[in-house]
Image (cartoon, rainbow, N blue to C red; front, side):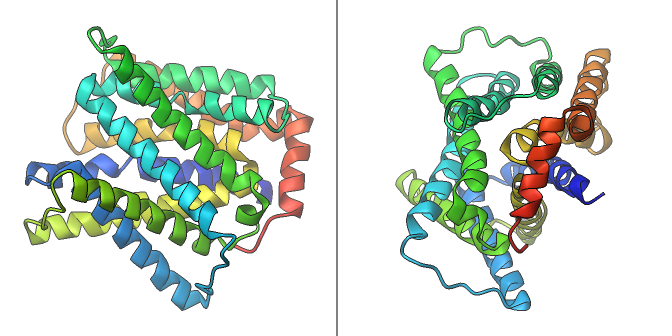
Length: 309
């Protein structure tokens, strides 16, 4: 059963990422801009990771050789979110979300072209099902007419930035061997620095308007940031970047479920079909070690060289 822990952490990471709207929408309704929210989110989550490190006795010490990689991860984390929000301002949110969630294809291409990893037909099938499900959940009849070509490029780059982030964690030996808490801390911290600079250049950091906003910010930092990123790193190191990326389709699925249960949105037959496709994709990914011996062997190699968590 140990080999399935990575799949569990991958699903938990993507599902908790899907809770982001639950905490951000109330803050945006109070007047907070996304750049301020993202800045607060990253630094507060970094502080929470630091507390965990203190409790577990994990060293904060870093070597000079590690700093460029932290800056690298932080940059692509920042780039993914910033480019996606740029897309939201220039095209429908459904189209932007769909284009962003093409990142499993980016991960697959990088792993194939750079690292020579053979892609299982089961993985390809799961990617097709997951992307189809995300499109059905997100587009809702909007095919993005009127959006500029630049908007499409920016959102595609947001997904590619996230793909690079996922691949680097598992394939740069220095990062793979690092304690997960330390890796998460400095990735979030450097990402927060990029967000802060961006925020200061675009009008300044807004103060929190209320105690309710502070509560939502704490939950945002705790669940879809701290929990999500720790589970994401654990999943990547357990099952690899490609399989983890496909499990990311759980994120829009969770967002839709929250919309239905909390915000009173209506469930349509198209949405149900999208949910079924995503669940099918996740099922194939979880069963892939049983279906493809090459995946099973790859997971055994990951298990043999798994770092301390």
